[in-house]
Image 1 (cartoon, rainbow, N blue to C red):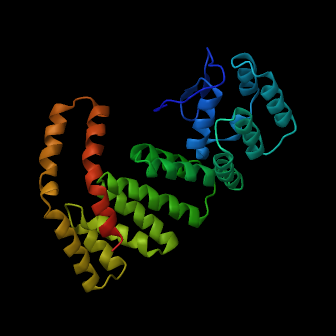
Image 2: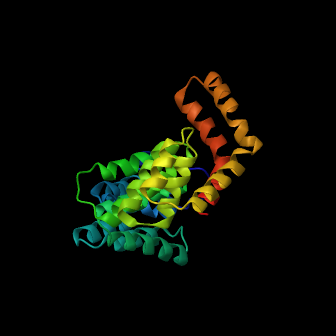
Image 3: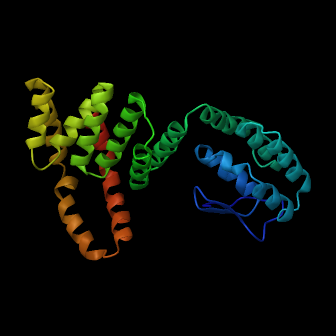
Length: 275
């Protein structure tokens, strides 16, 4: 899972598979570490006979297995079930357990779409931009009735992902969807900057007229864009993309290298889009 974990309990011959994140777990310590690092991914699916059987049969901890089975049969809330699990392992400190449980308990009070949005936001924050876009799309395409505030937040954050990938047309369109619902200055600013960063300025002209943006503000945006465009890294960006397309015929390898290059521009974009 990325780092060494000291295990006092047995190591399972057969792992516990976490479907939501495609993880194989081999010990109680590893499971505790996973939950601590990914509280936003913990769902009621964890409360299962499969987990209890795995702890009993693979880890030889019959006592903890029985405690969790009893809690599950009593229909305890998810955060209490996870508290029993983490406490029974002994890998995390009391403070770490409390912090983790606080997040899980908070998520329990949210709707299904709100929980999915929080998890999608985590993908965005961790730089998994394409995964985040797909996750936001799955919420918007679920067919559920989504209130205006949640819809706007999803569209705004989806726009951020597109902007950091330098897909400025898609970014501008999603910022606009957010702005129509939330009337947020941040969404409006993102919409205008994304449009201004497009090669064709027709959308920028359309938007400043549609939303009655004063000329001084239009000029401020253009000046900020010009400063960014003058950077040597940006001037060299197109040449790098052409070389990448030739060097990486494999799509996943190409995207990995593209995201590495783009990571250098994200702070600049976030800075000017908040101006």
